[in-house]
Image (cartoon, rainbow, N blue to C red; front, side):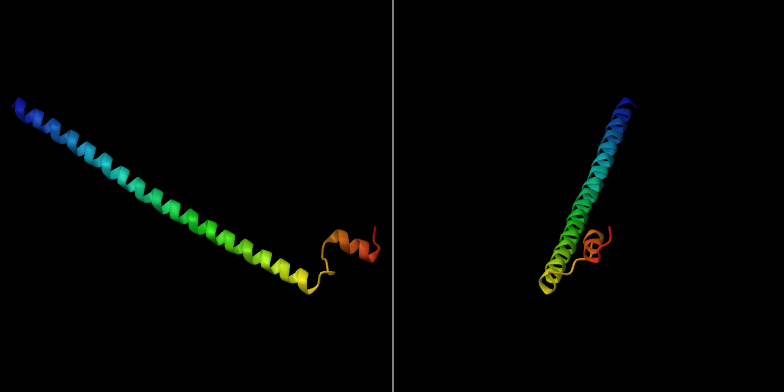
Length: 80
């Protein structure tokens, strides 16, 4: 009977190790997915900023004298 108990202990340790390795594998999959998502979101943000910069430049080239800030409008209209 002691041999069976020793074998059972070995089996339970092996099962615990296998479960631990499975959890680590799942965590690695989630870490890779999070890394990919972060790269995608960074790319989307960079594309949006590039588009906004291009729009700003196009507006300045088309009408460099037109400004829409409150400070500049009050100066142009003589409001103080």
